[in-house]
Image (cartoon, rainbow, N blue to C red; front, side, top):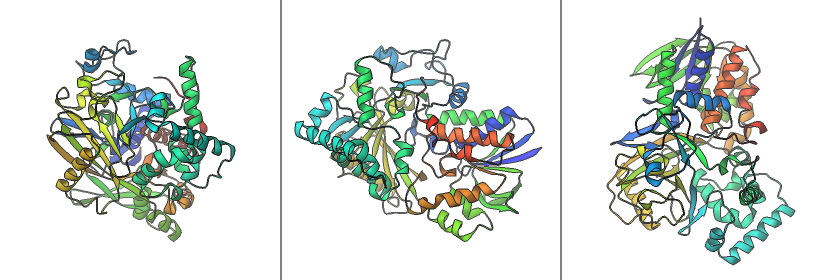
Length: 516
């Protein structure tokens, strides 16, 4: 029986275990997870009966394989959730699916509403050219924005960086208003210093052209077969947050025979003749060693290379300088928001309907606000009388902001909410959560990452998967797909690992939208 060691119990690592044990019974699977909780950055954090989603995770995919895993673990709702009942919302539910009011294992169907908050006004996200946008911008800025867009359709810039990428798709005026400052908040770098690959990775086909095309199809009730992922109107979401799905998936793989060691940090990876022979990890201050035939890694490439022996110096140097962006979420519990719901969307207590607010204001550090009530009412202990927010800040581990005390962070966040006019009430409670290496970044030594990936692929029994395992800003479904492809390689004894690295790169993964 071959022994497979999987590093990391996030979406990718758990999917790899599930796929492997589903297809074959002659593998011993051991998962090593550094944290006490499974799910990676898709975990759900509990705080006094309220739940926090780290970064916000919409369950939407164009992969039928991924969708089948999700829905086999948590079936799609067949009855209305409490808020849908109260608001008399009409939804296409799954016949025979669970009732979220009576059952916990359920995927809710949620409305996607995310807007930009800029100069105390709301703009659709992505930007739409409707009457409200024109009102907010003003006639002159709208005209200037239109001509700026047309200018760069005629005289396109050579795309050398992320700034060029955005300007070619939105024009310089809209870029300066809605992309430049926000991108610098997220990454700590100006867009001109970031690789254009980030745009292809995350923004893909979104542009003024795509937005106008979508608007045209809506206007004339035509099905838009080229609708981009960022324009979807509905998504799935577990009743108790994304972590619920991965907690259930972890239970499933354990029943299938896998062993999961949590609080187990990998510290040494020993290879000989370009094949990994053992993994050493620390659990409860004791060192353990696992011999292995196959290794599937979702740990950060930077740490993986550091733990490996006999790595060429140039590869070590590139990996050592691969950049990441770290992240702090501050949960804030309040009685209500001071900003009012002026949309046509009905909500409980007339709270604004957004899942996310993107904060474009350059005068505050805050990047995004999650309203957990709108992701799922079951995320909030007393959701009918309180609003549970997640305030998102992007930073670097051990920078001045990261090193503020929890008390200082809470005060800082509360003052920014008041400054933006989002709250004027007393804060009932709050908490802080720091997340390391949340976002692999596309600058510094990233330009040479091909040298690192070629080296990793030369290790015959090593398969790198997931967001950090590939240093690629993947969504959950892409991370799960890398695991599915890795298992295919293992079972087919395929030494060419390109199908794993081509996930979220090839056209097929992001051209056509599959329906809910």
